[in-house]
Amino acid sequence: MREKLDFLTELGNIGASYATTALSKMLHDAKLKLTVPQSRILSFSEAANYIPDPEEVVVCVYMRMVDIFDANIAFILPMNSALALAGFLTSEKSEHLTDLGQSALLEVGNIMLSSYLTALSMISGAKLKPAVPAIAVDMNGAIWESILADAGITDFVTVLETHFSTEQIELSGHLFFIPDHDLYEFLSSKVSGFLLEEST
Amino acid sequence: MNEIFVNMGQIGVIKNSGVLVTVGLGSCVGVSLYDPSTKVGALAHVFLAKSRGNADSELLPGKYADTAIPALVDLAVKAGANRDRFEAKIAGGAHLFENTKPDMPSVGQRNVEAVIEQLHKHRIPITGKDVLGKRGRKMSLFVDTGIVIVTSIGQQPIQI
Image (cartoon, rainbow over all chains, first blue to last red; front, top):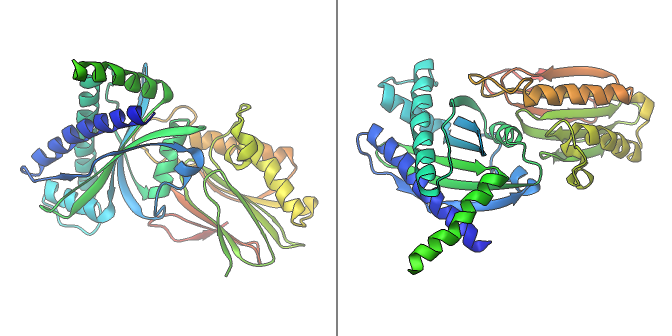
């Protein structure tokens, strides 16, 4: 199990690197710091307690893929970061997230999430086609549970989470990747192949 | 004031004074039961509509509408409530990501319909609701008065 999770962590690392490289380009090559991703298998009760401040207002760009595998992927920014990023991208200065700012964030999120999925597909061979992205500005808890409910989580949920930040602008955020059971099994079945390759 | 937070899939019950709060209702539905004669209040945070025989519904009946309502009634009755005096209020069932087409109907809508169906089945009148739409909600039941307050970001709190 630990081996599988380590392998997933590595996949998450590569996915997040692709996603943040895409973000960095849009920020005129700003340096982005990435934490080592965490991959966890959470029980439903753990998932219910996963968000530290469920009332915090955040901006979330979200994709739900329904294909051979189902997966949910989200890019979440606290409000101050969302405003900083939207301000940088649109040159608009506003204390509120404008329609223009929101569509800029949707587009950035779209590019980041698509890059993440492309990287994951390339490494694992799993077909992960990016879906139409959606955006919401709401309470973190409401967003989190809506994503879990969309995914139809009933018992356990696999969560790959990466935190990133940059000092170029005041920006920090999270990337979440939530594969369904079949995709988790598929991705983690690749671990033995990779270990064999490494040992030869 | 005694404040009890009811997390996703959970049920809380208190008597006489205090407040039951559930935060971060997106597509989930908060269901409160209140008996004004005994001042017993109970609140569930329902995640999905149907348990479909999942074993976890026994451990966490509040998770599904079809197991949450019977469990909510039982808990409130055990706390001293009179079954015939229940008033129910519901909030939630939103579709947050409005620019994508939800599954038809959306998870939130299915949750709301399932909760209403269960309340009808138990002959409990629904005296207040704030459901569907696109905004997440916080729901608080004040047990000394039976008042339920619903808040969403960027909106004035409303009493239902």
